[in-house]
Image (cartoon, rainbow, N blue to C red; front, top):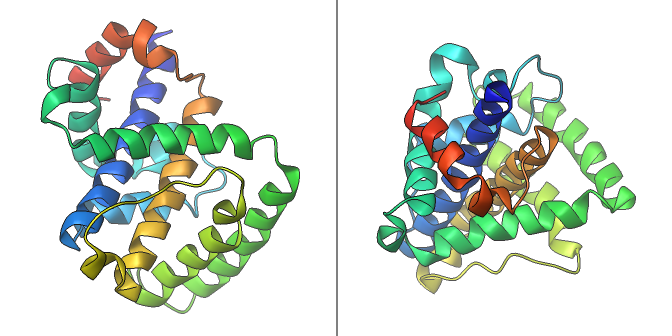
Length: 209
């Protein structure tokens, strides 16, 4: 059970980190690249021996997801009022959208095809943060998840959201968040755990990974 909770805490941290970065982009037009990079890289990790490896391995995972771990702990603990409500809404929306996605074989297949294209694209660029890589992941989101009946509505400053690169970053991070939500489900996480397993998850988040 402890191992399951550890994996769930990692996936949950990634979800909330993606949600917070999307909220920051929508309001301020910026997102910390140190926290964006491991999330975007996780999209390209298809086969992994552990949940930690998806986000940088046992050595880097804690630092890579530090923002999300703090947000998740505060949301489920006594610091919820200090968290941007949009961050919470985006996180829950990612979990909900993934629950719809797992029943949609056509969209899952389309994501697989787009993922192969993005992987080939990565051979030509040195970082997933390259503008063309972010645009490629954004395109994958536009052609798949954004066409589903449930869509994540992002609200913020139109001056930022209308900038093509910012819009691409938002969509790419939404893709990373849904990928984390898929991982959350695969390691046994369920939405009701956020209420009924809240104390156990907080304890794991406080203990780090």
